[in-house]
Amino acid sequence: MPNKVKGSTILVTGGAGFIGSYVIEQLLPLQPKKIIIIDNFIRGTKENMKSFFNNPVIEFNQGDMRDTALLEKCIAGTDYVFHMAALRINACAANPRDGFDVMLKSTFEVAELCVKHKVKKVIYSSSASVYGLAQHFPTPETDNPYNNQTFYGAAKMWGEQLFRSYKFMYGLDYVALRYFNAYGPRMDTDGKYTEVMIKWLDCIRDGRNPLIYGDGSTTMDFVYVKDIANANIAALQADVTDEAFNIGNCEETSLKQLLGVLLKVNDSTLEPEFREENSINPVSRRLADVSKAEKLLDFKPSVSLEQGMRELTAWYFEKIKIATN
Ligand SMILES: NC(=O)c1ccc[n+]([C@@H]2O[C@H](COP(=O)([O-])OP(=O)(O)OC[C@H]3O[C@@H](n4cnc5c(N)ncnc54)[C@H](O)[C@@H]3O)[C@@H](O)[C@H]2O)c1
Image (cartoon, rainbow, N blue to C red; front, top):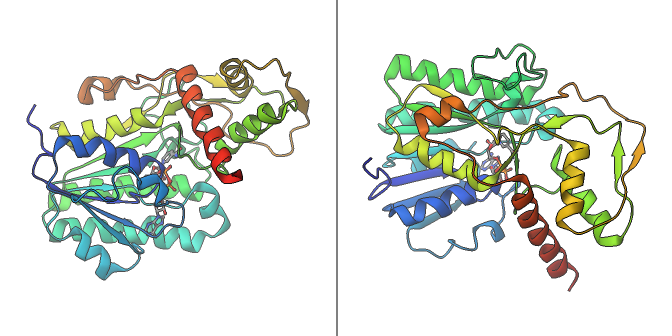
């Protein structure tokens, strides 16, 4: 397959963020002409970009996607766009108007400007949130989105449909990737489910028994961030358009099992303590069917939960050490 990245100019919106920074690290060896980043640092950091920030191929724009003139400056002349900038699910719930401006309006401007400037393809970061509590496990892409109850999931589905309509109306090529539960070094340490891993790591470090609210039976499909970045590169390189793909690890892991893995990789003999659940999670299960991505993108998750948790632990303990020194 020809290397489409070589000699290309690529925009990564949200490139200072968790997943975006890994996508950039995987693009660089493929010899792009230029990588343009736009990020307002609402969540992303310069620290996430430290391996490439001074690379001459990188053009970093600290700014807001809602600034349409800046967005146009970033899109004009680009061949490919990874559209990753977004608010987190909790931030959308806390302030739907901001959610609207960032997730819907700015995504609309991205689509408009990509048509105007003849961008060859957009890789859109969608989410397993589009399913809400899915109908089938493992969940194929054909499951419907009507069980979703979140603004965030609604916005992601709208984004997918927007790009679909722009393909139909204007021929704009795109691929949407529905990530399941992303984790790994640089992840958000106070996100909706990620904070539980971090709280448990704090307990392990301090020798306190980790707490589980409820019976720990809620399941997720934890997918390592480098596997997600691989899927993004594959989505750009493959001759595939107008498709949405699940990107997961294909392992259904309960919170109780997750804690077991964290304790194991840390050689800890601590026991979980169970507490009454204080909120009801309407999404009690997640498990991806990635056979479509396997077939059309040659995607295969390669990092086991145990290996990923080792890397997460090493990163987090190093981060705390630096912060406390
Ligand atoms: N992390 C996950 O588990 C997960 C799961 C499913 C989908 N996704 C999606 O993947 C993408 C990347 O997620 P992530 O985990 O790297 O999140 P992240 O928050 O680390 O990265 C998003 C980046 O976008 C930037 N940003 C937000 N609003 C902006 C704005 N108005 N202008 C400019 N920059 C802005 C943030 O500063 C951040 O650096 C997002 O679209 C997210 O919705 C993530």
